Length: 233
Image (tube, rainbow, N blue to C red; front, top):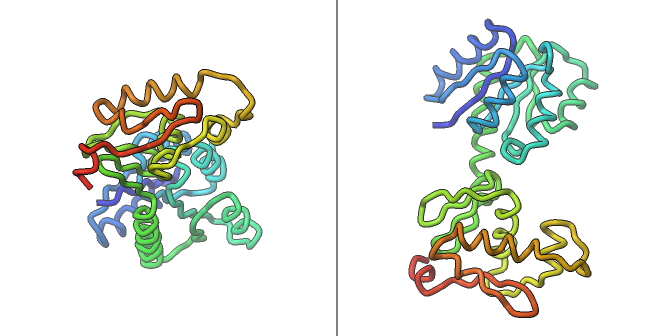
């Protein structure tokens, strides 16, 4: 069941949207009557789609969108923007900010339902390409999540990026300088224990699967499936 977050300060609009969506599909519908609450709910619930009004007090739709796009947890959530503004300039502003679709008020509820379905279908198709699987490891690039043997492992963003780089090239040695540059933006000439410290913590979180990250002495690190992991492919 897809979760849809509706952010609009007008109760009548929220009711109209919710009613028509509920009639079309068994969606899990979440509502926020202002931008600030909407941002909090988006980060907490990580909905599959957001329907966002532009004209709201305190934090308008463009402000909400900026907050969503600046957070790794919400940056890839598709957004349909609802607005009383119908000018081409306003539509272009929304699209340039990262809106996936744009619907001026007053809108046809049937059209909104169709646009929601299309966006969810596109997002679902894209999500299949966001999964990276190797043995017991399953990384979701869009949600920044790791499932290990089907159980979610709590990783920091840095740990996730590091593991992702290793899993994208299994069996190939990743040089220290390359990892430092890609994850932290450090020059390969910098002497730092940051990489080693993060590798150690990452191995600890991976438990018995931690030995899949192998040290190539004097060069860097390599992701190599153990026999236990390989049996699960």
